Length: 489
Image 1 (cartoon, rainbow, N blue to C red):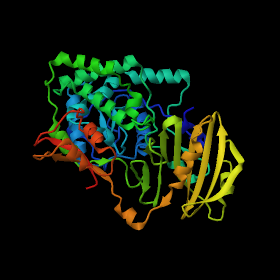
Image 2: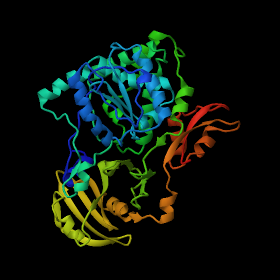
Image 3: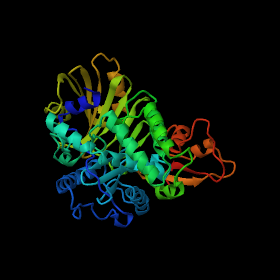
Image 4: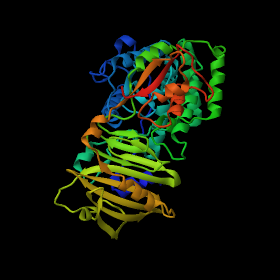
């Protein structure tokens, strides 16, 4: 069992992984696109009613898990235009697709029964033109067209696998019963042959719709570069759901290029870059104020007024239910908060049953950054754990650190993490602002380096600038080019 899963088990979390299938096709014309203030429904769908009903039941859970629907009319119009163009060449043009942009920084896209399509703002921020968005959506439509989801659903039924999304339940926290971990939703993985078949169907659709058929291979390369950027330390990045469910290999990129050549040499088709960049200009990048911000190796929550840091080499993944971080040597950290009666001692709380494998003798009271705290150790199934609970205001915050049983790094990492916990000042909270993608035109004299230096709130600015703009290590920019930067303005 991986360390994050063990942390969940340690804290008494009941977690079930969802299996959301790309199942049946549909289509939507741009004129029928529903704005964000109107819930997506399937009331007008007459075909495949059972599948549509299943999708309608899942839709609110998808929204809760992925931070809700991202409302930006110009962005929605841009994405709806792409979907509308693809449906003109659909193998089943009489059915209805509905597109929802999810308010998640994760890189993901998927489909549900009844023609529900989902794409995250994180994926849109990584793309660089409309043809790349079309390639992603057409791939998901490819699974739909080939009925891969139905085959997967049948297999899951035979194996008795769960097919519903469930809450991430904290036994001692009633308020957490409605909190779903954003980004922990796992879509049913398709076989390699099904992935390649969906690639072939998707690239064919993209080319027939007039888009650049080479967009699929380009975006596969962008995702590969992004995951390399995120995991350069050797830590595992749990946020890249699309890469987790859509295997990305050099062979797959080569095959995508070979399929694209059927439409002609590179340069064929439209990329529709200007329309795309206009659509994503100003899109939220990274985390929301409601969930706090990750700035490098530090997590800061302006509304709760708390902060903590992880050691270099760890990658933080923020969700609505918890903050997790993974690092070298299979180490992991989990941070969350619970409501607790102020009269209850923290040592009694640690001993109250929510910690599996607790070493009772290790429980002791401490003070961390001037706050009342308690710490303890636990062991279970080949793992060792450090538990720190800290009282701040009306909340108790929990920092759980996991390491393999043979690791000698647990104590030093855990003390570094818990020792970094602190309350934010009023000025610090006021200074924290959300990040956005801004599209700027390159001015005479500006370089990749000077443009990257303009970015705020992110680490390794030069590397991230190149990844976001799909620039090779030696690529340059020219005056008049449009590029994406990350800023808090």
